[in-house]
Image (cartoon, rainbow, N blue to C red; front, side, top):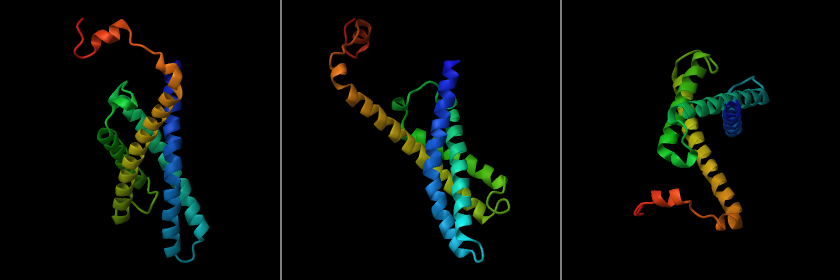
Length: 169
């Protein structure tokens, strides 16, 4: 049971991280779109885009975390390659973009705007995945640095020594 709770917490954390990264992008897009529309309050357009991008970022991050768990099994972040991790994020972003178009979050169905949204979400998914991996690896490096003196006395067990390349045993 504790394993499931840890996985759910991880998916929520990934979703919140992506939401925090996507919402400023929504604000910029809202500023651009809102300034070109006449008669629509700019603040309302910006706020709608911020909320929409935050929600999409949350759903994208949480679902990416779930898909990654299923696709990559029990591998840790330090065991995954950046290109593969990014490809999973791009695929998730594309699926999320198509879902957003299908739900008509931006206009009516598949159009030029829809293609732009799908492309942008694909790039956002890829960039978010790459950033998530970089943050996770940085966090792991910081933990190792903090371990410092405690880790200096650590030694390999006999089993670990036998598994080393070139060992006799």
